[in-house]
Amino acid sequence: MQPIMTADEINAFLETDFPQIHTDGRVFHVTDVAPGRVTMTFDPAERHLRPGGTVSGPAMFTLADVAAYTAVLAHIGPVALAVTTNLNINFLRLPQPQLIRCECRVLKLGKRLAVIDALLLQNGSGEPIAQATATYSIPPR
Image (cartoon, rainbow, N blue to C red; front, side, top):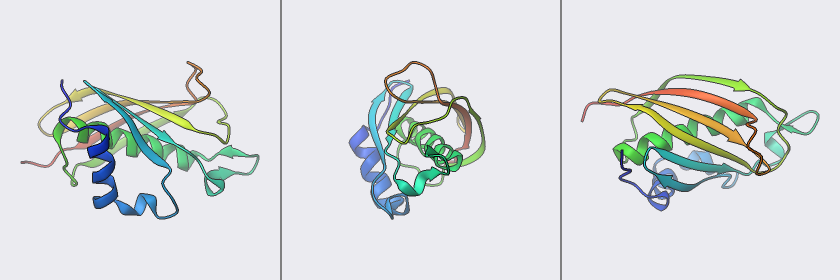
Protein backbone atom coordinates (compact mmCIF):
# COMPACT_ATOMS: atom_id res chain seq x y z
CA MET A 1 0.00 0.00 0.00
CA GLN A 2 1.38 3.32 -1.08
CA PRO A 3 1.24 6.36 1.19
CA ILE A 4 -0.54 9.44 -0.14
CA MET A 5 0.93 11.94 2.35
CA THR A 6 4.57 12.79 3.01
CA ALA A 7 6.17 13.31 6.42
CA ASP A 8 6.13 17.08 5.85
CA GLU A 9 2.44 17.03 4.91
CA ILE A 10 1.54 15.00 8.02
CA ASN A 11 3.56 17.30 10.29
CA ALA A 12 1.81 20.33 8.74
CA PHE A 13 -1.60 18.66 9.22
CA LEU A 14 -0.85 18.00 12.89
CA GLU A 15 0.26 21.62 13.25
CA THR A 16 -2.98 23.01 11.84
CA ASP A 17 -5.59 20.44 12.92
CA PHE A 18 -4.07 19.28 16.24
CA PRO A 19 -2.00 22.20 17.54
CA GLN A 20 -2.73 21.10 21.12
CA ILE A 21 -0.10 18.35 20.85
CA HIS A 22 2.49 21.15 20.56
CA THR A 23 1.14 23.32 23.42
CA ASP A 24 4.29 22.97 25.53
CA GLY A 25 6.72 22.63 22.61
CA ARG A 26 7.18 20.35 19.64
CA VAL A 27 8.10 16.91 20.92
CA PHE A 28 6.41 14.76 18.22
CA HIS A 29 7.79 14.70 14.67
CA VAL A 30 7.08 12.36 11.76
CA THR A 31 10.48 11.54 10.28
CA ASP A 32 9.71 8.92 7.65
CA VAL A 33 6.81 7.64 5.56
CA ALA A 34 7.07 4.51 3.43
CA PRO A 35 4.60 1.99 1.97
CA GLY A 36 2.67 0.61 4.95
CA ARG A 37 4.96 2.36 7.47
CA VAL A 38 5.50 5.60 9.40
CA THR A 39 8.23 6.57 11.86
CA MET A 40 7.71 9.27 14.47
CA THR A 41 10.15 10.56 17.08
CA PHE A 42 9.31 11.83 20.55
CA ASP A 43 11.78 13.99 22.47
CA PRO A 44 10.56 13.79 26.07
CA ALA A 45 10.76 16.89 28.25
CA GLU A 46 10.86 17.06 32.04
CA ARG A 47 7.04 16.94 32.17
CA HIS A 48 7.10 13.49 30.48
CA LEU A 49 9.23 11.88 33.20
CA ARG A 50 8.07 9.95 36.22
CA PRO A 51 9.81 9.58 39.57
CA GLY A 52 13.02 7.67 39.00
CA GLY A 53 13.83 9.60 35.84
CA THR A 54 12.21 7.32 33.26
CA VAL A 55 9.68 8.33 30.61
CA SER A 56 6.14 7.89 31.94
CA GLY A 57 3.74 5.28 30.64
CA PRO A 58 1.13 7.89 29.63
CA ALA A 59 3.76 9.70 27.54
CA MET A 60 4.69 6.48 25.71
CA PHE A 61 0.99 5.65 25.26
CA THR A 62 0.48 9.08 23.68
CA LEU A 63 3.42 8.52 21.33
CA ALA A 64 2.03 5.15 20.23
CA ASP A 65 -1.43 6.65 19.63
CA VAL A 66 -0.26 9.75 17.75
CA ALA A 67 2.25 7.78 15.66
CA ALA A 68 -0.30 5.08 14.76
CA TYR A 69 -2.80 7.80 13.84
CA THR A 70 -0.24 9.34 11.49
CA ALA A 71 0.29 5.93 9.88
CA VAL A 72 -3.43 5.86 9.10
CA LEU A 73 -3.33 9.44 7.77
CA ALA A 74 -0.33 8.70 5.59
CA HIS A 75 -2.35 6.07 3.75
CA ILE A 76 -5.89 7.54 3.67
CA GLY A 77 -5.14 11.27 3.60
CA PRO A 78 -5.89 14.09 6.02
CA VAL A 79 -9.00 12.73 7.74
CA ALA A 80 -9.23 14.47 11.11
CA LEU A 81 -12.15 12.32 12.27
CA ALA A 82 -10.42 8.95 12.09
CA VAL A 83 -10.54 7.98 15.77
CA THR A 84 -8.91 5.45 18.06
CA THR A 85 -11.28 2.62 18.96
CA ASN A 86 -8.72 0.48 20.80
CA LEU A 87 -5.09 0.69 21.85
CA ASN A 88 -3.27 -2.02 23.78
CA ILE A 89 0.28 -1.36 24.96
CA ASN A 90 2.94 -3.58 26.48
CA PHE A 91 5.72 -1.84 28.41
CA LEU A 92 8.81 -4.01 27.94
CA ARG A 93 11.87 -2.12 29.24
CA LEU A 94 12.59 1.00 31.28
CA PRO A 95 12.90 3.94 28.91
CA GLN A 96 15.71 6.43 29.37
CA PRO A 97 14.88 10.16 29.40
CA GLN A 98 15.94 10.62 25.78
CA LEU A 99 14.58 10.44 22.24
CA ILE A 100 12.14 7.60 21.52
CA ARG A 101 11.46 6.39 17.99
CA CYS A 102 8.09 4.81 17.19
CA GLU A 103 8.02 2.60 14.11
CA CYS A 104 4.49 1.89 12.91
CA ARG A 105 3.41 -0.78 10.48
CA VAL A 106 -0.07 -0.93 8.94
CA LEU A 107 -1.42 -4.44 9.53
CA LYS A 108 -4.86 -3.84 7.99
CA LEU A 109 -6.33 -0.90 6.15
CA GLY A 110 -9.99 -1.42 5.34
CA LYS A 111 -12.83 0.92 4.44
CA ARG A 112 -13.95 1.32 8.07
CA LEU A 113 -11.07 0.08 10.26
CA ALA A 114 -7.30 0.26 10.33
CA VAL A 115 -5.02 -1.81 12.57
CA ILE A 116 -1.49 -0.59 13.31
CA ASP A 117 1.46 -2.21 15.09
CA ALA A 118 3.75 0.27 16.88
CA LEU A 119 7.23 -0.46 18.26
CA LEU A 120 8.87 2.08 20.56
CA LEU A 121 12.68 1.98 20.42
CA GLN A 122 15.65 3.86 21.91
CA ASN A 123 19.43 4.12 21.54
CA GLY A 124 19.59 2.49 18.13
CA SER A 125 18.93 -0.81 19.91
CA GLY A 126 16.74 -3.34 18.17
CA GLU A 127 15.13 -4.15 21.53
CA PRO A 128 11.78 -2.38 21.91
CA ILE A 129 10.91 -0.51 25.11
CA ALA A 130 7.18 -0.89 24.35
CA GLN A 131 4.87 -2.39 21.75
CA ALA A 132 1.31 -1.34 20.96
CA THR A 133 -1.50 -2.44 18.69
CA ALA A 134 -4.02 0.24 17.77
CA THR A 135 -7.33 0.14 15.91
CA TYR A 136 -8.84 3.22 14.27
CA SER A 137 -12.34 3.81 12.97
CA ILE A 138 -12.29 5.49 9.57
CA PRO A 139 -15.30 7.72 8.84
CA PRO A 140 -17.25 7.20 5.62
CA ARG A 141 -16.04 9.37 2.74
